[in-house]
Amino acid sequence: MLNALTKLFGKAAPDIPAIGEAQWASVEAGLPFLDHLSPADRARLRDMALEFIAQKEWHGAQGLELTPGIQLSVALQACLPVLNLGLDSYRGWVGVIVYPGDFVIPRKLMSEDGVVHEFDDEVAGEAWENGPVLLSWFDHPEEADGMNVVIHEFAHKLDMLNGAPDGLPPLHEGMKRRDWIDAFEPAYRDFCERVDDGEDTWIDPYAAEHPAEFFAVTSEVFFEAPDLLHAEYPAVYEQLRQFYRQDPLR
Ligand SMILES: [Zn+2]
Image (cartoon, rainbow, N blue to C red; front, side, top):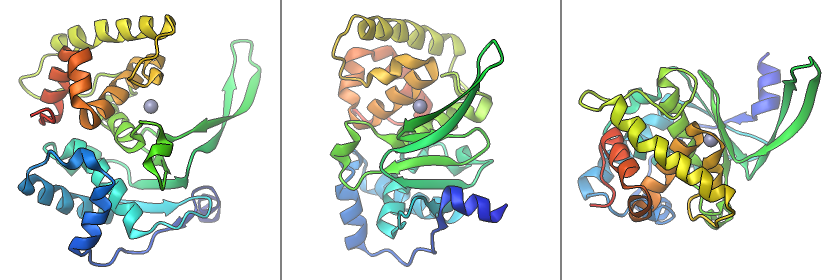
């Protein structure tokens, strides 16, 4: 079993050594969307990232050597959404598997007539319910094409805290399910229409695939380009602000 897992998921990462200021700075230079954080929040995020690295089991797949730089970068991005929610939001699973670039997941689907179709699905990331998070690592973030795979997959993890991902994560006290739906439903419908009309949307058209993808993609945009999300879908921005307990626009 262990052998099979190693074959599938690659090698476990060694423990990371103490991190100096220069290394933090070099990793954070690649994550400009952290710039709005106050020095105190930045320090909190670093502590959380180290704790997250220690709590999870890390693997580099397909020969990718997981350097401390890669782990720190992934951990900082993974922890950003839960900076004010706590690491407990990522409970119930341990694996973080990092691939060198896009990767292929062999799929099996049974159609209604009972025929099993096997095909390879090329993806940049995937979050398994009660299982690991699979991520692509891009040495040059521009290869990722405006996406933030890490925030995307970890948003799915939050969505899965109350069952299969549906774009409605467990809301905090004081938030209303009705407000969430009233914000997200019309925005999702509008976005799907724009994509269907062939509009070259700034928000990744993949968001039109499913309400769960719309939540994950708008979460990426919330942290990476908050002004844009606020301009296009202010009600969605407002719900995400309440959900993540952060206001990146401020
Ligand atoms: Zn997704």
